[in-house]
Image (cartoon, rainbow, N blue to C red):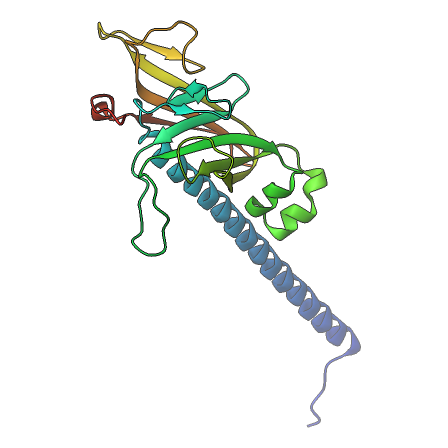
Length: 232
């Protein structure tokens, strides 16, 4: 008995089904790859935010409230200054000193945080190569941390700059205080408009509007013992 082969119609149907199956498989693989890329991008974004949060937390919760410094004009500036233009400057404790190749310096550190337009060359340190190439289409700022080798402002004591986070839409701080009677209040700038030396910072609220996460808010208590020791 002669064995019959596939008819032309059956062959065309088989080829069509194979093509559809291959196309579906290719589409599934593409979707999986896209999903993995999105997961990786989201993870990288959260890692950047987490690193910035850790950096700011270490600085803000270790500020030295009793250590003002002299500015470029020799005027005394408070241990912590946060102005309405969003620039934060403070003196912090606990700057580790290495015993190897480290110039003589204090374990106190004067530092500054400020927002810089994303088109500025310094922001390149906080962006990926792809983001930097597309910076003309990115709106916002990068958060720059600057510190001096020594506390006082001097000609041979320039700022050293680091990018903490980019890109951001905004950064803001609020300070929770406690007066001599134990009453608490909130302030959007520091020092407050009224000169009340009895006020002490007990908590700091930070809001980072980080693209594409959106506003992320953090709150840290300032250890009470920081207000009980003098660093003069």
